[in-house]
Length: 316
Image 1 (cartoon, rainbow, N blue to C red):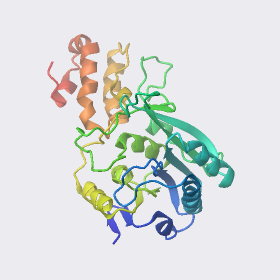
Image 2 (cartoon, helix red, strand yellow):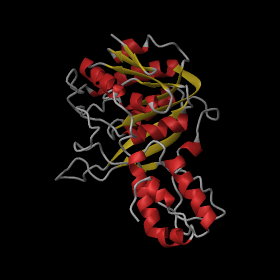
Image 3 (cartoon, rainbow, N blue to C red):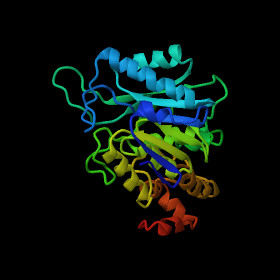
Image 4 (tube, helix red, strand yellow):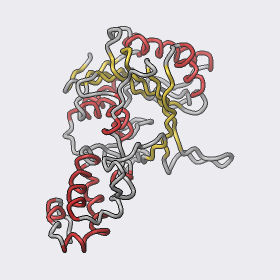
């Protein structure tokens, strides 16, 4: 039975059948991490199809995504190296989408190999329905500048198409019993960039519920489809947990710009930094303020600006 929690809909069942139940032209954004056909054990399925079967399966679910996505919508698809070129061709040639970005998710630890080079990245394809009319909220996903300059946009820089987020290690408190769980920070960036509050975001391969968890805490209406009832239950329980910040963050978010020498500019910037970059990452605020302290404590003592350290229990 489907569940709805905080405007997040968990649809349990076969993706090709359940997608047919979603109204055409009703979804603003699709973000999904489909099986890579690498023989992963998803309990209910083994992720092991013949090459032609996998391509045909991909065409079928992407065709349904094309149908439900609005004319100004965007789709992000995680994909492994073996099949990514075929998914690209399906989206561009078969479905008529417009290519926007090829995003590389870089991580420091991954599969070890003794013959050949160990992989240290996954890829994400970003396509839009319309070449020009689509949502992209750059201000919501900027990353802090390295230096303060009056000519810089201190709201931050474009994060680029290489994103560094740690894997969901088993020591992470939010790690679920799912073989391919992705960091919430990845989904946060895509969802904030390519949808607005109140929009409908679809994940046809719901997995451990990362997409819905991010939608829940960014005021989007999420829909996930998941074959395995155990993963659906996992998602349900995850949505009921209190929110204390997303489980991952781009390390650049905690960096404090150099050359914040003007007292008034420095004071304003420090508070803005927390609001702009760490709103959904409260656990990372102490890391940012520790760097602030290392760079500017002496000047902040001279100008009487140390109260922010007390606000966040940072010893000076």
